Image 1 (tube, chains in turn purple, cyan):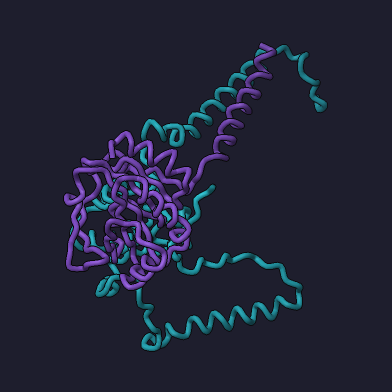
Image 2: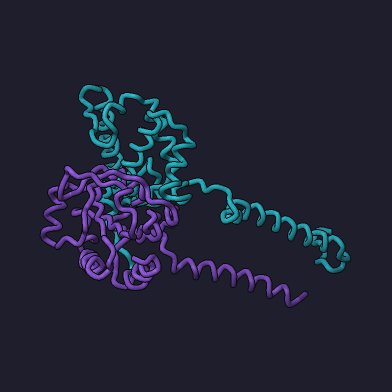
Length: 176
Length: 179
């Protein structure tokens, strides 16, 4: 009974310390997406290189693909761009760009200057498709499987570590 | 490496925090005069409504004329967290995304959607995180009922201590100095 008197505050302190400690490694910026495991939202967008051509969600079914949300006004996108180029080169799956709330002219310039890793870039001029995908911080990257289900989402800059530890193993599992 | 963020979505100018400033006594009168002058200046346009330029931009065209609708948009927007500036609601925030989401709320209200439908729209895209008032679930039970449980626990402990002391013989206490 006497020991309990000391043990209870000690235990309470332990619990509190554990909560506080685990809070240190949480990133409050990382919002869990409710869209993982759900079908990618429907969209119908024109291509950046050919505004006459419209691409819909159904057109991309059949094999896994990666969607990279970017904009020419987004400085971190520029930083991540070499990683996207590398991913497109060896990933073996099509990387589709979603040009988010950008001027198409600026976007085309950006791609011709920095290289275009995308099989196609779709123009989300007013950001509505971005909202449907739950985009809140460009750049964002999604992995969509052959059935059109979103399997993975990364918010922020893609790094070689994320590509090799998260995206490539997932793609191997999906048989991309 | 920690992810970096896109200029907070090119967020509009952050509101400048109004901090109380300690001033020497001599400066206080001047500051008071300045404040009075400022108040008069900002009040002036209200006297001449024609001169008061309307700020363009954030509202969808044609909608700013309906104050009742705007009030509903603001009331509903105040329930959703801005994903970019996470401690602001999308009613408060000037981030691009918050403006877009406000416009989305307005469009849906105009279309005749109910607040529940709008809430469903938001949570389908951004999860429960977007709700400023978290729903009661098994994962949020501690959040909702924890304080009440702590209060009850405290009362129980208090009761136990009082009853235990009640049963103690009088000589265990210090004598009352007044007695």
